[in-house]
Length: 440
Ligand code: PLP
Image (cartoon, rainbow, N blue to C red):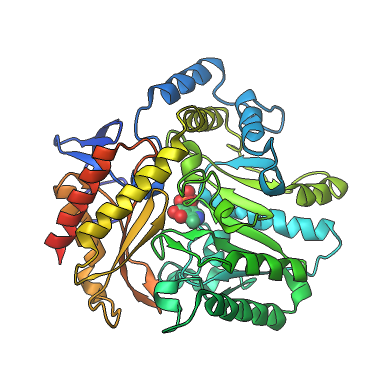
């Protein structure tokens, strides 16, 4: 019986003993392609020599210094790299150790902003159903994944309410145009603002591209422009959670670039450090920082490991490699090939409901019936079976049972490293197609 607490208490997963490029090796010698970078984390694959060298250099120099007394060069340089050119008006960065901590920081920053700005009554947050913002209590309260919330419901903050996500595969009515769908979702959001009292709402929170709970669900064109307009009209902030979809994963540095808007606060994590070190953070607009600066003079928050020198050095190196090797171009080119290969292999499969995504962020939603979009019996845990079949064929993917109308659905995410090759994309699609065929 394992003593380490794993995802399941009765069994331990295989021991990973080596990572190199796209390959992971288990203790029994089994080699798998890391086709999803864990949960869309390992954006440069494993053991990238430039990242390792930067980490070693940082380690020789400084591993830790507490932020109550010191800053460090790697954190300062990482902030400069991310917001020095003020993308979308985001001018400041704050680094923590995970996506959940990033979400907590975003929520608290929004709250403090309104206190400093003389609107302390803004205590409500609107988020979306079928979303995931992390596992800490604040982030979990923001999230709209009912299965993850279930047993914690009595201890979750009531400051959060939820509206429908933009999920055209199931949310759009038969024959409804993009424009009409956007207007329907906008009307629902507007109604929620009115129900809460628009002057009481601090922020609307959404994943720009929904990762874990819906499987790479991109919004229809115009959706985020309407969301931005509603937030602005009511003086609320827009918090975009790009923990999974950001930092290049969708083919642009920030996923919001493709939506023609920018958030007031953005949460980043996975692709920031590529898994080389635990790091997340928030990017914050100048106007939010200005209110804090004019008010109490500081962010009423903090973690022991915030802006950690090693984590920031690793992230700096990861971002440096992405820029030097022009990897966003590779994300777009290989992403198009992955989409084409998945479509060719699985597009006509009787149980593939939709293949969707952007950049190198793709998911396949599995359904019992393509015509009715009925989900499989949750007891089958079909997504997990696909994961097992893929593993047996030498591919690691990210199977998820997102909630659909309160029930479990099945989708599997593929998120290869940004430096994946054309040949590797073909191998991933081939192994994944075989796994789906074997599982159903
Ligand atoms: N937000 C999103 C969109 C995520 O996908 C995740 C993790 O999967 C989180 C937040 C939480 O990040 P972490 O697991 O690093 O706490």
